[in-house]
Length: 208
Image (tube, rainbow, N blue to C red; front, side, top):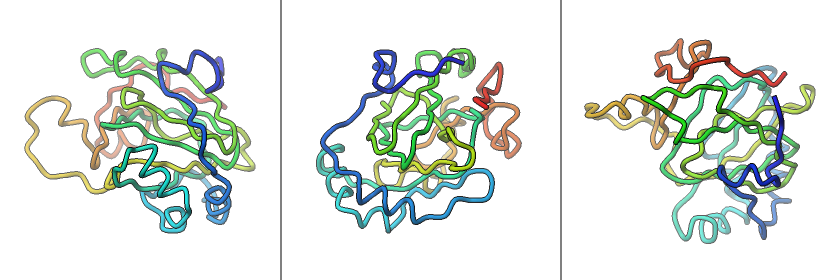
C-alpha cells in the first residue's frame, strides 16, 4: 500500500493541516495516559486533556464557538476494520507519527464501500490535522509497534456518546452506532461480530 503524507496534494480532498495551535501542553497530558497492553482504547472526553489551554482555542477558533470535547484513541493497531463519519470535521493530534486510513463518502455505492478506495496518510507528531465531514476514517494505525500511538480526537461535544433512541426511517439510520457516529464495518471486525452494519467489501487492510 502506498503511503502519502498529510502535506501531499493527495490529502486535499480528505482534509487539511491546521496551523497556529500550540500543542505542547496537550501532548504532555496525552503522554501521561498509559497504553493498553494490546488493542485500542477510546474515550470521547478526557478531563486532563480538556484542562489544557488549547481546549478553548479549539472551541473558539477551530469550531467557531461551538462546544467541543477532546478525547483520545490510543493503543496498538494496524488494521482498517471499519470506517465512520460524523456531521462535522474531526481534528487529530498525535504524540508520535501515526497513519490514518481514509476514504471519501462519494465512494459509497448502495451503502457499500470497496476497500480498494482507501488511502493511507502519515501524520507527523504534534501536527493538527482536520478530516472533513465527508472523509471516512476510524482508529489510527501505529508506525512503531513498541511505541503504539496516542491520538487526540477533537469533536463537537456529545459525539460518540450513547446512541439516541428512534425508529429507523431510512437505510442510513441503520448505520448510526453512537451519537453523531455512522459506521461501516468489515465482516472480519469485532464491530461486525457485535452487530454493526457490514458495509466494507474487499480486503480488510492491514498496514503491517
